[in-house]
Length: 85
Image (cartoon, rainbow, N blue to C red; front, side):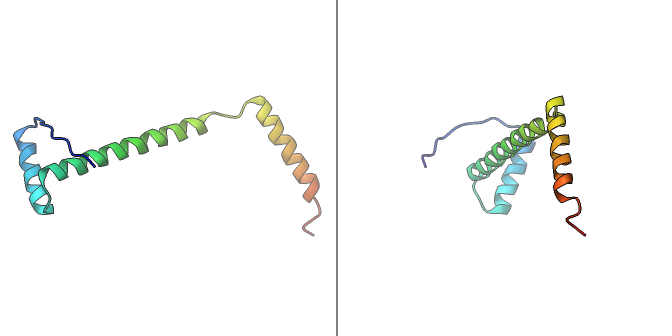
């Protein structure tokens, strides 16, 4: 994987926290920033996927779907009626 250097500006208190955490984890600041960005991107993808799933399942069945469901239930009931005696 190719590394690309970049410069960022952050507030001094945040820099100091990053510096301390990097030392605690025994990683470079660059590695810590990479890990943080990777985590941020993955969380964002997960949130987008969850939103898409919720959107797909939030709609109520339309009238045709409800009628088909009722017909299926009725057919199933006739098929299994008396089967469990």
